[in-house]
Length: 131
Image (cartoon, rainbow, N blue to C red; front, side):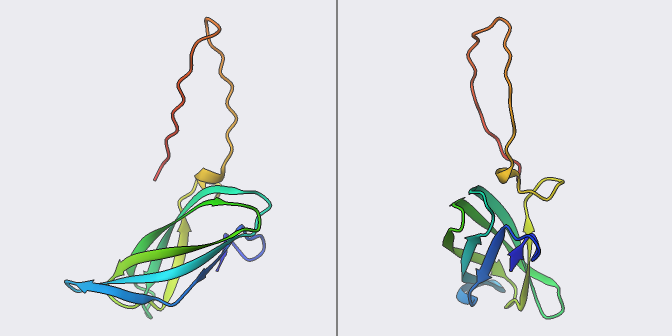
């Protein structure tokens, strides 16, 4: 799977076979090894995706979150992806947790200029993220 599209991919994600690791009250817990490759020309400090699992009728039967961090240019990482479902999925859909331009918010660089009055003020830095 190429994200965001095949024409200009940033990431290549290859999901392995889904393996059942547990079951309880009508839900099953599944796991898959995911190979993620950075195909962009920039390092990816962090990206977060919601993975929707679909049955043969394209009905969503489960979902999970896939987080990628510290992925250098051309680098690959194998990630264990675990999720709960009410059946065995036959396809999946990937949705980035992103801004209006389609760029994951964790990949965006924002310039900041601080002007203090009076000059020389101390600055406390706090980073928050949207989920």
